[in-house]
Image 1 (spheres, rainbow, N blue to C red):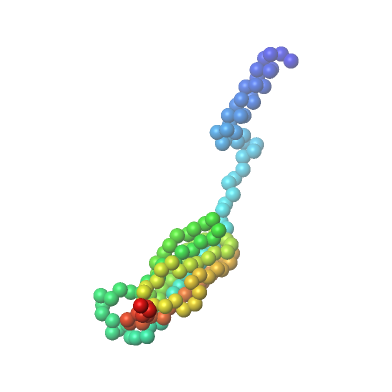
Image 2 (cartoon, rainbow, N blue to C red):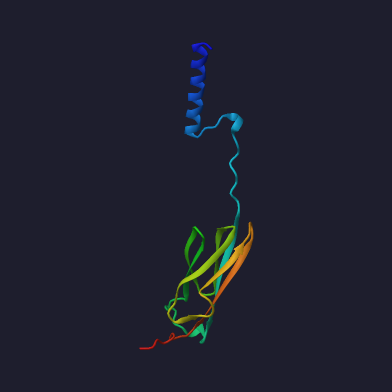
Length: 143
């Protein structure tokens, strides 16, 4: 083999190594990036049962609110707050998702577990409900 052919081979190897290191693949090995569309949706809802008529409350009273956190393994979808009887929806990865109550108003009592786990499949919508009992003057605490 002549030194000219060895030089060309070495140059070709160097160029290929540089393309691979830079992240550019030769056209023969190029692939379309995979779509990561394995997402579903969790709709978190809350229902508040009052022991009094809300119309009697002053207009400047604060609304009942609760804060929730949705997470699955290594993915944390963040905290979100819901006011009164309402729902909010979060886009989540396919799999088991846990929704946990982080905070709720002091004049109410959670009626049921403080977290719920559901399995969400691709393009599926799952509802998670939490209910509360609220008193006008709150639930007393022992001294």
